[in-house]
Image 1 (spheres, one colour):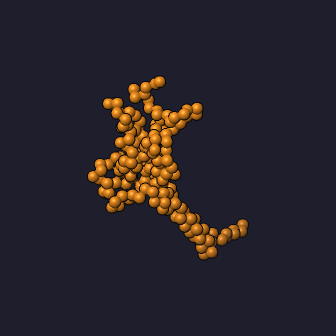
Image 2 (cartoon, helix red, strand yellow):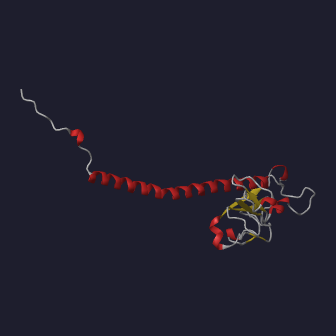
Image 3 (spheres, one colour):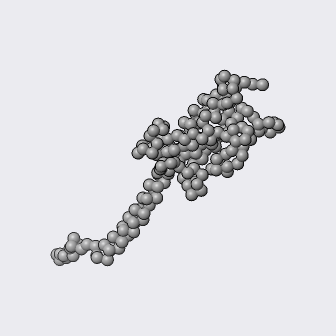
Length: 192
C-alpha cells in the first residue's frame, strides 16, 4: 500500500497583499464612520434645544392662558399686558431662573414675550414687525376682544453684558419664534 504525504496547510496564512487590502477597507470604513460623529452630535444637540425651547414655550403659554383678560376691578388695563416685552431666563433643562441669575453659568435659554395691544400694537421683527390692530373674524366689523395674539421668542444665545440683540438679522437663525392665539375662556369669559 502506498501512502501519500499531503502538504501541510497549517503553515500557510494570508499574504501581505491580502492583509494590506483588508486594512485599507477597514480604514476607509472607520474614517467614514468617524466623519459622521460630529454631524450626529450636532443633530442631537439641535433636537435637544428644540425640545427644551418648546417646553419653555408651553410653560409661558400655560401661564398666559391662566391670566385673566380683563382687570378684576373693571379697569381698562389687561393683566396680559404685564407679559409684553418680558424676558425670562432658563437653565439647561428649561427650568426658570431668577432675574438675578441671568448671565450665570446655569443660564442657557432666554425667552422674550410679545402680546401686542389690540389697537395700535406691533409685532416683533421675527414675525415681520408689522403693525397690529387686533384679530377680526369673517363678517365682523371690529376686532374680536376675546382673542389675543402671543409671540414667544426663545434662544440659546449667550446673554452677554447688556443683553441679546433680538432684532439683529445675523442672529435670527438662532432665535426660534412661536406664534399663538389665546382665547378668553372660563370665568373670565362673558358672552353677549
